[in-house]
Length: 303
Picture 1 (tube, rainbow, N blue to C red):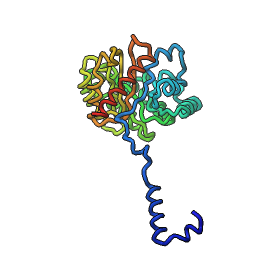
Picture 2 (picture 1 turned 30 degrees about the horizontal axis):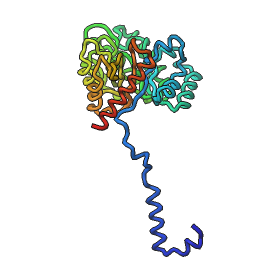
Picture 3 (picture 1 turned 30 degrees about the vertical axis):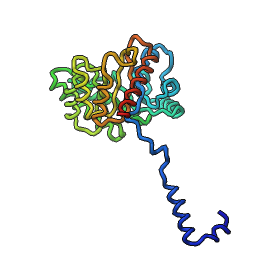
Picture 4 (picture 1 turned 180 degrees about the vertical axis):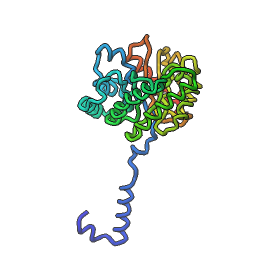
């Protein structure tokens, strides 16, 4: 507005114009008014364990594959695919560079083969805690929220829970200054009993301790009850898949029932695709899982 125009305004007109402009400046961005999705979809690296082991593509290309091939914006690493790189600053920086270049969030690291956090031998249990520490630091460097660990032990259920709680709590205390969660997956043995694993997290009683419910790893324990047992402590969810029918439904588990349990627990975070089937190629299995999760999400959003 010209100086002449401004001078020609009455004081009342000037104040009214200023107020209107001010009101417009605080109006919310229309994009911000869009309802957040019921949950977000990430991609677990284990979905490509055969491709990675056969060198079809490299670990460093995982973010690119997730984003460019599937449009997925968050990834979940498995430590065995960069086992000697936890303390390699240059390598971690390259992971960060590539993920940032693709606009991909590095959500968590699944940690295997680092010793038993519930080992009956106190020295071995301590060593397992120490073995996981570099992965905590790596997760912090990569901007992750969590590391996933295993609840391995021996003996009766009570003894296993007692021993594992000791190792898990010490690891949570070590991870707390880094702001990293330590989450346990139902991953075989007694950890696949939802009630036992939920009891373990209660026993640890640390805010960094949580669960990673996996739809496919309950074995002799009812998967729906197990998911319900673990969801109160869930900091991530693994949507394990194996096979699909012609309509796109997972044939070994009821995804709609499972996702209702997840959502009824108030969880709206990352649901990780983890395809582990044999019939479909890995990429096709990932696509089928993604389509099913998107379909279920749309159904629940419209309900």
